[in-house]
Image (cartoon, rainbow, N blue to C red; front, side, top):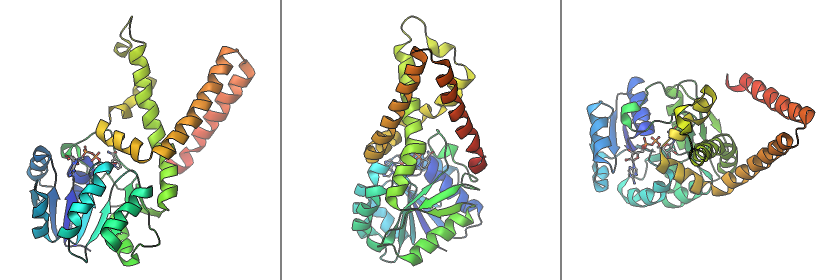
Length: 286
Ligand code: NAD
């Protein structure tokens, strides 16, 4: 078990990790580094951190044995470059980033065998440490993405840490991770953002947002998510996100045709097939 943990980016996920760690009875020290002094101040006031800094050079004095990167994914490479000379050689660096793929290999190039890629499949549309949750990871999956270079002692250490916070760890290659989450997480976010955008352009004559039905509210909750975080995810996982958007466009086009041509039987079959698949999914995720 690590004794000195550094959380980089003390927003919702960084704050939740710190909170969950403390709630698990962790007896060591939890440090924070963030570029935003407000978030750092809030995290300190909430008791999530023992100490924190907005000056990256100061993380050296913390001598962390475990570092949890929890900022938007496009900050990871520049951060790793600056952190690498400041961290003890025997430390472990892992992350909560929503994209793995090439990013994992880039981080391994910079951090060497210190790095173990991770992604908790847990979260909300809310940002900032004030919304962080101690129980966020309980019963949820955390995907770790080892490669040929991964140090198995460190992988085991990260796995045990997540299990201590109540999570169930699954291993996946960085490439498979990005294909899977490009489809089941990044695509739905893209579609939710685009749906709200479509209603903005349909709102010329009447403000449609004054009449949200339950379906619209459910479906677009995730469009309230942080724009910088999602910009970074879409750009970093661009190839898989584009492939998923193309598959979605094809399905929407098919549905549009069935509606346009009034093909009742085929339209019913399309909707039945989808309903069945969506209902079956509940045996996996509740
Ligand atoms: P957030 O906006 O709540 O927090 C991000 C924090 O990072 C902020 O405090 C911000 O000031 C800080 N930050 C930004 N740039 C920085 C830099 N260069 N150096 C240090 N700190 C910096 O966002 P979040 O929801 O906590 O997401 C954080 C990470 O977790 C992202 O990589 C995201 O992909 C991943 N993630 C989010 C969710 C979710 O549901 N929110 C779920 C799984 C994974």
